[in-house]
Image (cartoon, rainbow, N blue to C red; front, side):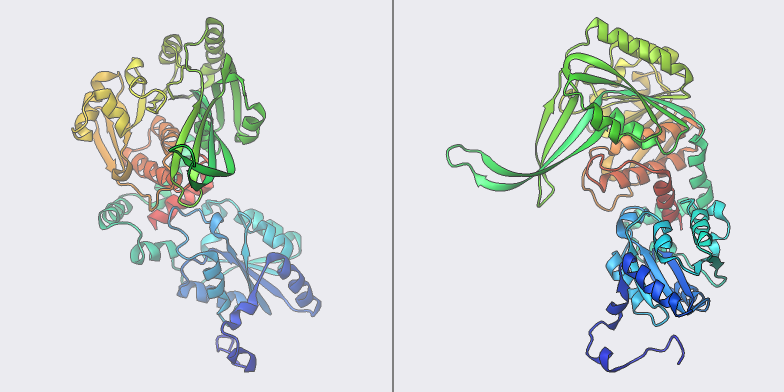
Length: 524
């Protein structure tokens, strides 16, 4: 019987989903493979996302099956698919069921690990099969194909690359199942016509040899999840039941974490409290590539922002600040100036994340504007400083990144167009390069002598806006310093923003592999 013909037997007539018998865990596959090999048969292993099954996939699997006696397919779990918001289109359960329904496939498992290496170690296939687009390991943005191949060979197996027609699931999805409105699809189409995937993704390498110094307040972000109980019996207040809490390294630590995977050297200078310092938590939360230098704020706590969130809806109910934003005493300020003076010399780029909680004194600002090789600045408007944390306290910078409301506060003009306000910003601070994030309207960018660039928002869902601005500041600051064209900066800025608003706060940081895959998927 041809392997592509469907087998019908008595059992399948009474089984609503016969293919379900093919669905296994990775550990179960290890036992099954041992049995198959004991019978002297050859095991073939394919791994991928298989988001939108197409003819290229089918022919790939048929050729793979021809390399042995039993074909096992593992798929990447949803959490490991770094192709941007809205991807995968189909969850891993549906993807696994679809593959299991194919006669040519013997077993399917979902792989929870971030790559196929662990699955290969357990399955120990005789043949590991990948598509022809993986023949050149340098074109693999994940950098894992070489490690996968070495793992297969370490067990005496071999790697086979199929050579047949190929399609891109991402390209088919972009063309036929786009999650974006027509105007965004039009912009992306025009951008794809102007820049290749390689041209865009390769700019991330432009910042890989750069050293960056991040300066700003340390903030501990807390999310307390609770459920509503109702109105209190004796007072006109709502009562909630505490369920759980998450903590993330925020503020300047979040900015530094976003760059840990991209730059050669990342150093971070922060102000931490003498009270509730959170030293151990911070150490465990930072990317291993980050060198941290903290100055203690005598008598003050490390800044904490506690948000109470309804567990069912995700809506924020209330926010509580723990901080002392009074002016720094002379000893603390001198310690900060000395630390910055020592570290600023080696930095190609200095990124100031100014949250307006007392760290950025006039003397420190003066030092930064005089000694930085390339100065990137954001002055954030938040509940703790609203109206008082102005970009105009910096006499100059090389690049400024602000949110739209922060620009409006600075200009004191609410209803003008972003372009009008941006032009006026050039009179506020001696700076020639600007990015302004506009939420659902995307981003707008301006450089004196070059003009404006604009890009639409690429987010498909918004879970939490906290942290998105920090990520955009970090990544665009480095790209602008490296001289990357503004259109590409704008595109990447919105991809970064989309990734961050799809998650709660600073739960995850940008990764080079993840962002590369996201950009590639958008450009197919």
